[in-house]
Image (cartoon, rainbow, N blue to C red; front, side):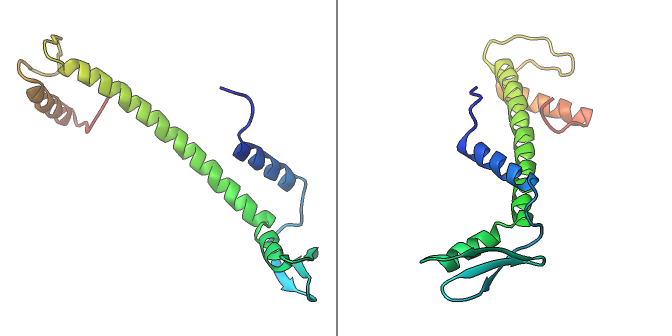
Length: 142
């Protein structure tokens, strides 16, 4: 795995660093000041002013990227990353369990399993395993 950050990782790092530098906190809003400029303000006062062909759109974008909004987005991304890591670990656990079970079901496989009484087809093995799991109070892969 490369130590070079992906573009999204680099962007996230840059945003966290910018937030840690201490920009004006709180929500920002767009106030139409004088044509053709737009002023971005917060409760503490002036943040920035845009001038040019896209000044209204640029001002709205800057106002939407307030520290409060960016922090909320980054916190949500961090939570989703943690959830994704948990789900990937669960998928890997299930893949390993599936491989064990497929091996157990293959024709001609003989294995002593002390928690079930089995001497039959793979389909009958499924039924026996399900019954054993239910008897153990379990609902799925171990």
